[in-house]
Length: 73
Ligand SMILES: [Zn+2]
Image (cartoon, rainbow, N blue to C red):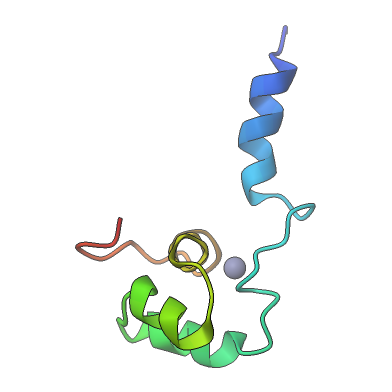
């Protein structure tokens, strides 16, 4: 089966171990996860811990498996 290496690589690298999630690597991950789990917005948590909102948003969806809330994009 033919593949499209460039495209596959760019998509796959998004959630691969080779590119660690900055939130997972953060020493404050415990309280960060707790904040997201109880419903704080990624934007709010990002400001508290000096992380990017995009990283928080992705971490919430990909790493925690939580749906993005309203106004979350
Ligand atoms: Zn993560």
